[in-house]
Amino acid sequence: MASLKHPANLKYSKTDEWVRVEGDEAYIGITDYAQDQLGDIVYVELPWDTGASVSHEAKFGDIESVKATSELLSPVSGEVVKVNEDLKEQPELINDNPYEDGWMLVVKMTNPAELDSLMSADEYKAYLQGR
Amino acid sequence: MTAHDTAATSLKRTPLYEQHVALGARLVEFGGWEMPVQYSSILNEHRAVRTHAGLFDVSHMGEFKVEGPEALAFLQHLVPNDVSRLVINQALYTQLCLPDGGTIDDLIIYHLADNHYMLVVNAANIDKDFAWVEKQASNFNVQVTNQSDTTALLALQGPEAQAILQPLTGVDLSTVRYYHCEPETVNGINCIVSRTGYTGEDGFELYCAPVDAPKLWHDLLAAGKDRGLLPAGLGARDTLRLEASYCLYGHELDEQTNPLEAKLGWTVKLDKDEFIGLDALLKVKEQGLKRKLIGIEMIERGVCRGGYAIYDNDQQIGALTSGAPSPTLNKNIGMGYVEASHAVVGTIVHIDIRGKRTAAQIVALPFYKRK
Image 1: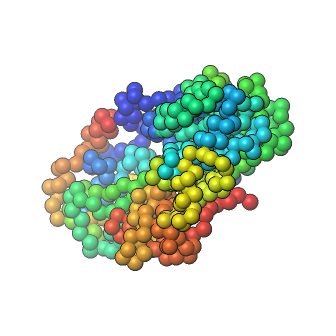
Image 2: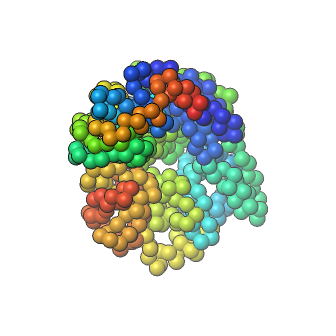
Image 3: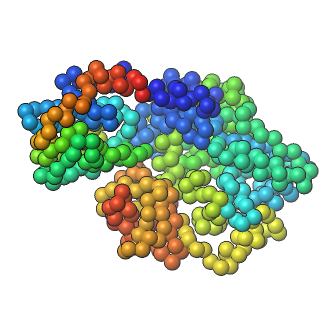
């Protein structure tokens, strides 16, 4: 676990999604810990059409590794303004680089106060220790 | 990450546990055992077995010794396959059936010496199987011994397996045919070297004493280092066996499933005088199968998994028992059961993937056959 990265400029959910806030927009993906737990990611189902709405702690997609299926839960509510289309053909980008090439959605937030429920990198690391 | 450490106290470990930890394996619970699911990546390990070789620790499997003057007569009664055709150092694949034809387990039987056989059963079923076998043995002059805790098992699988193993052993491996074995030393370690496996590739399974397993593991990894050998976990073992369309107990086989439905008719000798389940299986054969094991290949995007429902238009016709992405074929594949009338290769069906009906088709098994 020592080699896993959880950058300080991100916020983290208990269900292992990360958020990078840029103004009223939130970039969303899954954490290095999550991709490592899943193993080889082979498929991701996202709301591919922009304009879809996502809700705090509600499902926005599915992710499949060779071994297992998991749900993706949105850390914030809002409207999807951008989707990472590259993940359709190259879901392994999430394994290779979960914070850059492996981002999933950009959401225009409707309730930024939801960010307060997320953890800092240090809090998330402590949370992982207790798992 | 600490979760498995706390849970581990109640789980069994193989003699290679320390080796798995040292290699950085991810350990998971499997049938009451703490086993490596992967070392680096299921995909890499899978591909290594298809193109070079992989080394698996399958010491969790169970081994029973059956010995005595009526050993053959007993085994002929116990299983549907014909044990009488085995010469010494030959093996066969068969099942333990209930009187109603349902499958208690699937297993391999080795004929090791006159009146001496070894049964190799699934880890999760060891206690259930041993109780069953012991009970059936009471009317025969045989002794049944559970040697599971004193037997380790390594599987060296892949096209390079023979080249890796040959320098470590005196026997000419090219003379050991599929489903045959030889008692041999491997780098000085007493083993039963068996040309068997669960991956669809050529390869060997090596039975040895638990105390010798760490050295054997280490020596094999060293011998295969320059031939692309990787340690491989249960994750790759599962995707490999699915591509090769081997049944996995608890998925394609269970006590409610008979071996004829599971496409294992080639191992069921209905012309034998008697065995447990014969009458029921004869009746199944006479009346025709109600459902059949089929292969599924996804047409639309989506990964199918065991448990998902299979539909023909709005009618559910069956369910998947296994499913995964196939690393060799680059397709999403699965196996499952459908009503016999629907079990036609080429039929378009729909798989319920978390509420979304996704197009797939019924395809011939196996998905993968080595050249």
